[in-house]
Length: 438
Image (cartoon, rainbow, N blue to C red; front, top):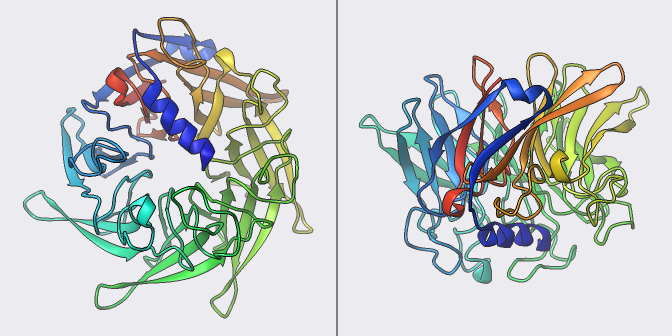
């Protein structure tokens, strides 16, 4: 928890001073523009999603209600951004039973409802020093254009989990799946200050005929098999779940473990079996902060926040990796790109494929660093990795100053191939929504 606490502290400490954008390599022919600047320190951290009409939906970590003053200015919001640039607030969290601080993005079901998680709020008695253990919420659209929030599940710490940092995914029958950062087995993993004990869990929420939802804990992490999942999950075509844990695993090269990639396979009796398909060792990656993406052949791709062979960063500047399945059930990892800090970027986040098989992602730091930028070691990048016969070739867009700082979420594509994303900071440390036209 100390690492992401440092990121949050760093985000508030950064001071913006100039506005500019530099492009590198093949990205020079592209254009980046800001399509929304948040007016208050709202700080979008989660991923974006589109509806069929081309509206963007997302969350901000702070802002909205004047509650939650002990943590930040407001408890966070869910918002909609129309193609004409108009931003509409769909829900302002109050910090009570309805939740607080939606770190992750939201997803749609087939009926047009939105689902998400909050990092805190809910049952304050279960996690008193944290302001609640967090909730899973639903936003249903009304005929008059408003939205109604309902809480589907309130976390209680042990044994059902606490502090869902990640968002959700849906299966074909409408069940929701996600992770919690802590909670679960109270005998495993030391507690962070203000947080309950436990290494985190994987959970499922099933809708009942009466409108209620039932939570099932699919796996409780124990440290050796992973600890503290910060990112969400993905399905493969066979119905297996895959994810990452920020800490834990077999390696002793990192304090608390370097993190793992895990698989959960469904059993015929309704239970799930976890297996660790890769345990990071530091040089091949450290701290898989982000989730995974699959290619068409079943290979998994992801990033680690630290690690790699670069000596520019104290614990490594992070890597992009691939995991390929073998016939015997094992997986082979290869490092596709090692970040070097500076212009190349550092602290990479989630990945997205385009139709041509290129990978896109963001880095919190690195890029352009000048005295005027006001960013610690650079304001971050959006990068592209293109597969070539000799390896993966990187090009990137670099943020600095008031154009936006420190992207934390992956980018997404519209139907025309334009990229959209957010930066956690920007003018007034509030963050922006940006668009890149290739």
